[in-house]
Length: 272
Image 1 (cartoon, rainbow, N blue to C red):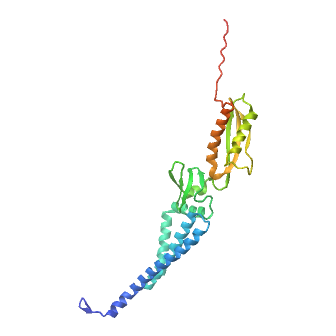
Image 2: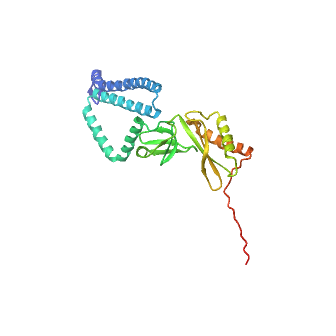
Image 3: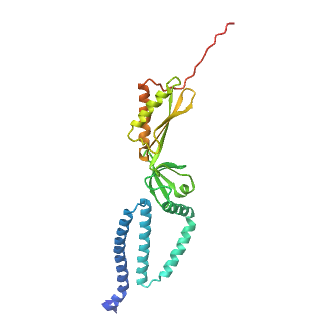
């Protein structure tokens, strides 16, 4: 075969193409092997009880490491010095780290949140920067879904360094409600009626404590009764609203009024 007036044998062509073919073969086979290994790894992670965000981070990290090994092996097969490539990557990593030091702080916080979780995906949390259900914990941000279906993305460094209230970590929560009744109402009758409402609700638990109703305080226009019941965490708001509605209804049926703020004005006539 003549190219530009020079005779080149197929053996010479093969000598040129052989390293390229070897590199392509390593890349293709490596991709197939990585795909098989990642399916096995994901299957193993899915059987565990790890947080979905942590599983995603671990699988992505493992895939990147496997891919780097394959790429380095492919470059080595065509005579490229892998030590030079590693040195270049190291220098690039340092340069990127200096340019993105604030972002790296978020990444470090994200890794700490994933491996030492103060919350996991699906938990309802409250922070200085917002509250909602945790959708995802990524390396840079944690995404929350609010009650009105808004998504709030909070930098991980803020979550790592601030107070977080986790409403889902414990299996049970206590519902606290303060209910006012008139001063002239029979307190003991009101307590009995409210206690019957609490005990009749299917979601109210008898442990760790039975339903509680006692006088809490004395307001300007009412005697305030404290209501405390234990429920499963996921039933908190259902029980809260059910009790608030049912107690008012039962008190009205039994003639116990719920007062509102009043101002009594006394006019005194003085004879001149």
